[in-house]
Image 1 (cartoon, rainbow, N blue to C red):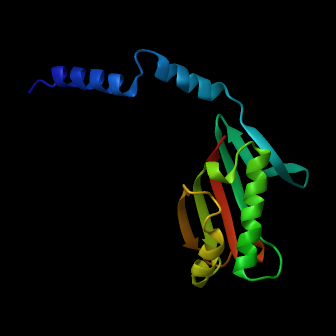
Image 2 (tube, helix red, strand yellow):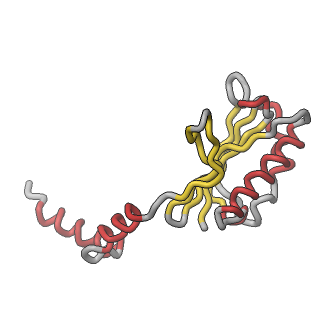
Image 3 (cartoon, rainbow, N blue to C red):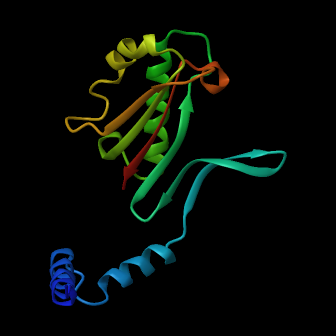
Amino acid sequence: MNTTPRRSILKKLLASVAGIGGFSLVAKAKELESNEKEAFNITNFQDVPLFSGSTKHGNLVFVAGKGAHFEGDVKAHTEHVLKELETELKKAGSSMQKVLKVNVYLADLNDYKAMNEVYKGKFGSKPPVRTTVATYGGVPGNSLVEMDCIAYV
């Protein structure tokens, strides 16, 4: 069975659908490679960079996990974490309304409903996709909740 004509048709179809018309896909890949990653709020450990509060590459912002390291219930912790995310997003030139993905880590899955009560509406009328998991052994720093996110600028 000869599949060459079918492959040729598929290649042409994919090229026209993707709008790559030649070298634009290669040019886009090179553009992404040439952009430097920007790092914000770098935390050092013994004078060596350990991690960044957020990084930006192209038009995407990646915010590191934020927790609440004080006494309080999950609602107070969730409110604090969401404010921390918002602060980090603003520093990087983004906002809560531009968040595409959120990961939520709960120390106790029984706090899911209370966390949701505070979470709802914080990202505008078009909320991001979200994954919520309960952590085994708790969240670092004794936070009851930790969140990270990906947004665009």
